[in-house]
Image (cartoon, rainbow, N blue to C red; front, side, top):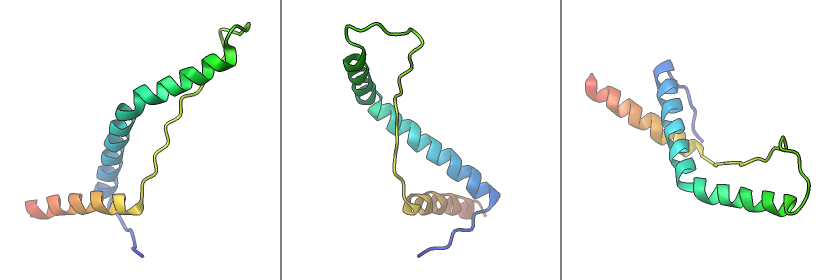
Length: 84
């Protein structure tokens, strides 16, 4: 068990780093996820009358752990400590 209490600076750094990780994960999986979504869409609409307003969804979901947060915050704290 751990207890998380983050400063405002740690929180901002955490958000920035998690956003970068998500961007990297999306970039790495974008082609496969898009192909999967288009294959499903085309199976559903193949040779059917469809509305040009029909929507389809491409979802990306990633599981992260509290350990990921601890690693990021630890990195931030080491950087700040080195400046001191």
